[in-house]
Length: 423
Image (cartoon, rainbow, N blue to C red; front, side):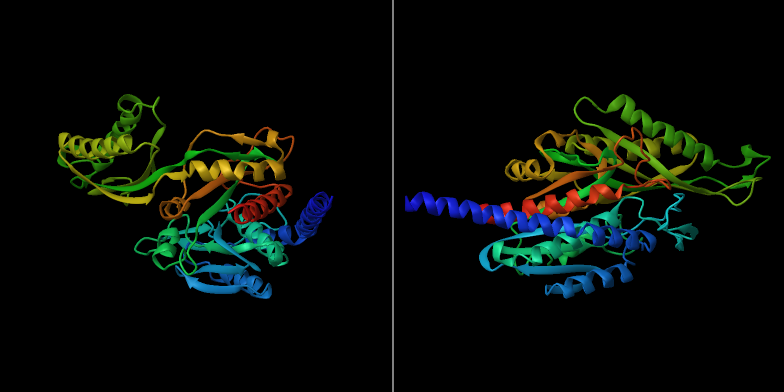
């Protein structure tokens, strides 16, 4: 009888604790949305997130957390130690914005302007990192009120420069790891999320294994011979050569890559050439990206691009050389850890709203954390209920429905407590 009574009491205690946490999450929604709007209105580019970091640090300090600043230039880390011993779990949010001029008609629209790579542009949270910051700040506040229920330690990692540091600079997850963010105390597991404008609010999407692509940045320097635009036979036209190279690159995907094995993408996103309409320039610069989810395909594509750029340029009397920069590796969700957290996601979203997805050719430097410790990365719905179309990320019209944010707090909170309490 005593055993039964004790068991009932323990169940009541657990239920009471869960209700208390659930109430705190519900009550923080107004602040959560206010934070998100503020970060959206005042965005900052990679490695320049000074005011953003200051706001984050001030909030974490107000919660009584141990706060570290200046990690990887502008990164912030808050450490919350539970009342009971246990493992160390990390939660990560990226904090940088993009050089995009916002077109949305919002009360908190970004009007920030800057010069990026010698081009005047707006600055916008066009990938939803403003929501990630707010979600993690809210999660930190909720969990800081329940140290008695935490078996272990939580690291809240606010990471700069996920979109990539400016040319010539270090930054992002790689630099945070280099500067010891996963040590002292040593992290046992890490979790991250990404809002998605094309996934309905209330939905969580996940995948075991590779969920996002490896990313390469390439620069093709094409050299010709400058001449008057009226006398192309007197020179070598690097603009024409560049067009042929871009066309050739696409045949690597369409005719040489086994896309039934895994998707792959080659995109040229920037072309710089010339000064006047009537001058054939001496050189052209092409900048682009390669996305792959298979190591063998990645190796083949890089090899063939090098060969093709050189051979095409040579055939037209010019020269071409590619410089490569690896941006990220494949974002790989640890299979055992993914299985372990699924019940937590089911609990907060409902099993029918936690959906298995296919891999995406987007890239994430969260992948570098996963190379060091087991980690899981998942997607959170941000599309207004009832809508069937949404603007994609990295566009001027990108938008997120605020009603989707609270589920992110619930997911982070539940995953963290369940992981620590079950380990």
